[in-house]
Image 1 (tube, helix red, strand yellow):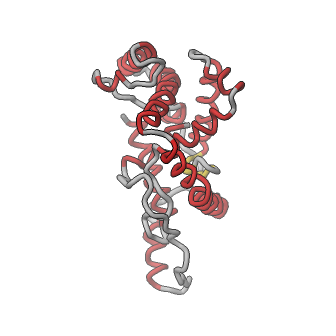
Image 2 (image 1 turned 90 degrees about the vertical axis):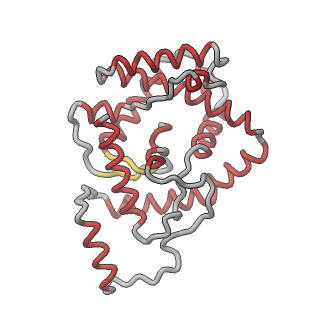
Image 3 (image 1 turned 45 degrees about the vertical axis):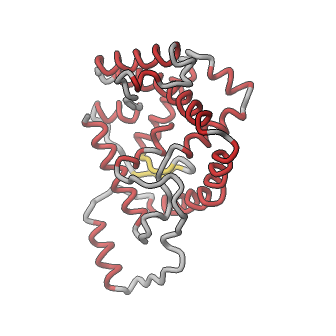
Length: 247
């Protein structure tokens, strides 16, 4: 799941907590405005398959408001009450757990060298890194190489299907949304570090996971300051997924 909210980081090098701006608020748009028609006709040339666009736009607006009024205040509070080294340890811990589906999907795609590197990351970080609290593998020249089941399906030629905006999680498509569910099942089956027991007995761990995920995602709704932000994010997401699958 972690990769989904961070997929736009490659394209948007933005501060994690830039000032919020609603790109549509107070903007006097008129469907008869020639410039607006020109911009929309240009965007249609991108030929993005989005038959659920009316629903997707509503979910996108919901996500932006949730981010503004709930997620960002939670992140600010998290920054206030936790020292930087604690936040770093929590980030590394969840990243170490994410290497389990990364490994499975690397092997499923026949990327055996990458799978060996991810295995080494798991071993080093889970032992020398004190259960993943310290990313010693990164310092040893083994950066995390994210793979998910959506990428695996794309690797074998499964088309993305219609574009989707998922509540809370953001940009996706039918293939990648199904991949999220598959990765979640793998994580439950391969309970290598007892994390599922921790989640069951301490449900507050899920809240910590969500806050950490948002804290480490630099994208901010409204920061593009454009009435066509939805179209731009949709295009960037789909192009980024194509690049990830082709790697």
